[in-house]
Image (cartoon, rainbow, N blue to C red; front, side, top):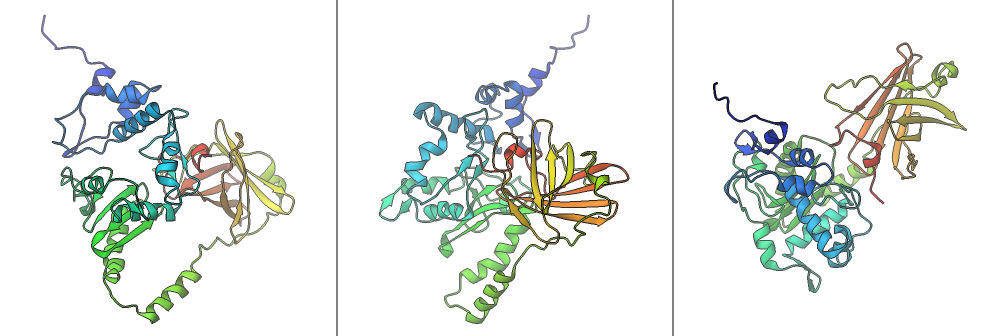
Length: 379
């Protein structure tokens, strides 16, 4: 009888190191698969790939576990623990943090905060832990946190090849904190500056390239170009997001309100969506769109040729602030555009009367596919 070696199970496969190019793969999905109810246990079941300090891996369960330890030891959620020690001293108002499982804040992702609050965190590091007369954390911690602790030379993009500290990426200029979709906090000690950005793009290296090419040179100037400043202010005041010009109503309302339109596919094959159906209705003097998932639904108002801001509630009673615009492109096609105002995300919805189906496509697909439950700040 030949020796075929030990049998391999799905569990065994989850415990094996997985490589992506020259780096080791993120373990978040393996941790969730090994123990869906307790991600910390799932993470601890995965053996280390290499000795500490010898290989770089962007590994979110590490940070999640640290957040879980703090909550376990203090009896407070992470944001509650940070409130008197960090958030209140910096003047940061209401924040929200996604939880998983219920009641445990993620730590590594899912924090909802204003752009100015992101800038305050960067300013705190620029001032090496000092805020006013107080030191909120030691200067020695800033030194090690913002220093390259391990090489990231195998990363594809140049601003990700400069090394990694303690939750900070080193960059071609200064260092930074990163969030998905170009949420950036750039700290530039040489220029004595902080740049905070919130965005909605996957072209993150391009965003940084523009900062280095167009913004950075101006930060080194000792004088102010008053004419250029006036031109910039005029341009900023004129910025707006145009809404599509459409027809405000169809010829036959009954064709559109008879039943919801099932969502069959996305125009962009890479765009995932959890939306199952779309319904169109008249509500008083406005047009209303209802989007439904398997276990959630929400209705919001849209306007023709302009954005209508509202705060609808989903079936759980949670407020989901949106801006909506919509109407008919022709007698067979309805278009609605919706921006989820507390997130980087925007969706286009197209209903086709002949096919009696709808398409719901994200401009940039959210990390979880865009569930209504995660498209607003947790409250």
